[in-house]
Length: 128
Image (cartoon, rainbow, N blue to C red; front, side, top):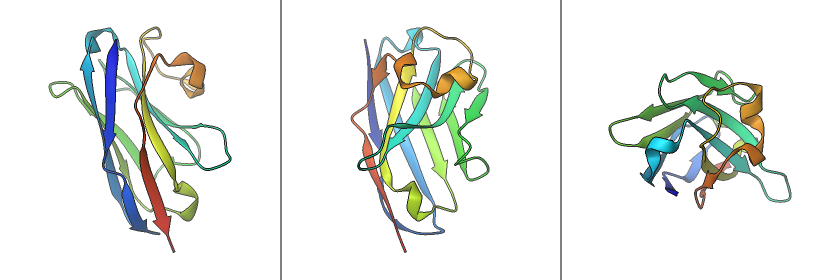
């Protein structure tokens, strides 16, 4: 089992930046890919970005390409999401997730059901 805990959410003005963190503990060696998803009220959970833990290869959702950057620190078992040029529509609860079955990133990384482990989420609110 892998435990994931997100932090770093908060209130930010449109155009601003925020950095989310996700601390992983437990059987982290069994996790190949980690990702960020988000969920706004009344909407389905949406893929944001994924990263292959070993190589750092990344894959992004179209709505955040060029604005968000996913990264990881293997030594700290930490996942990050740097969010720049934030928009009102980025407001959501952000979740980190771990995939213990697939070892590469790609279009398949977008599917919620592919992930085994989830954090509790952190709220990001973008104001005008």
